[in-house]
Length: 402
Image (tube, rainbow, N blue to C red; front, side, top):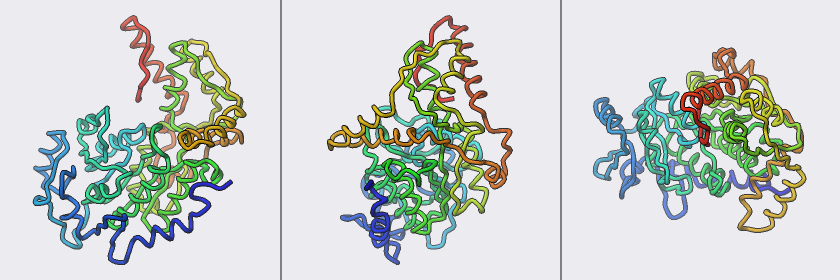
């Protein structure tokens, strides 16, 4: 099957690489920026950026918990050869389930954290409340990226397209522009989150793009670390834990695919641990939880811990594949079809997991400290049921991030 980028990855990488010249210039079509002129020229207008400040100014900035607007006259390019602080990191996708945990952990460990945010209905005030600095930029607007990267040592890329967004625009074109900017700006470390088994499923557009991005980082010789994720425990809360508690229907399939779910807090710990390990540079590491579960087993766990019987609506995988075929025939429903392509992964009844012994050694971490799904659900239901008992009410909350 012809796919978006695997069919022409060599061509795409070659053409994209040509956009970057030996002078460090990255060509974005109508606009071109270099690491030398970005300090002065890229800040014209009303770009929201964070420039290098003295410790006192940084303290005032964090205390204000607001984004800072810097005019062109206030921005002077850093002298050539000025070393970057190893503690200065940029988190992309900071409002997401994983990204917010990475931000929180990095702040706890003393890093200076900057987060790219976009104007949205639910503002990212909580990031500033925690002590991070937010800057306005957008992966789909390449010219907005270089100003946001000034003074950054490490990029931690947790972003992926939201359901209402184009996967291609964000996860391929946007990431390509971000990596080009990072290369031109001299970013020292690039941590990228991919999907476990992406190399096995080029027919799934998002997995294909993740694999292409991995190859692109290697092709441009970025000092990268790729983390391939199996699945997050937090996703099971809204999909299964809460609906079962509220006696609502949950969706199930007839596959036997097993997934080793990982707590995002543990994923964040592993991410920050990799920054302390030079041996992690150039590595592609699959992060998996302690045990793998089928969806049926997840539902059984939720039933046992909530003392509720689940109302399961089974969806045949054949129906999902048919729906993907139908939606893929129309341009307006192409993105929905791309997401439904994950049915192909389920159909193979795989075990989405990986051995973690060497990873724990590499990151100098104790595997006993990694949360199990059983323990995670115990903690979740323990908190919720205790709270409900205290207030004498019923759960109607749909957005728990524990």
